[in-house]
Image: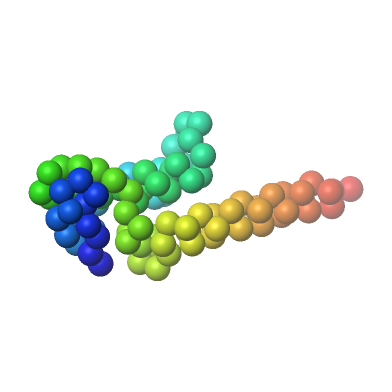
Length: 93
Ligand SMILES: [Zn+2]
């Protein structure tokens, strides 16, 4: 999975040069970042040529999802969680 550095246009393998917070840690960290910003953080790579860091579209989460796909997976998961919580809360006698 190769990506090109926007600064020096060196092409490199994003899997070998990720500068990321692991996605699970990024999601669980208690700060005010939006889910999108967290995913962005976890998709960061560092160019081996010039050291420039940028979020890559070629990073795959859990080996499958791209940044945008993972965002929707996450949104869907949160929606299900909220529905489930509401269901449990409402079904109490
Ligand atoms: Zn570079």
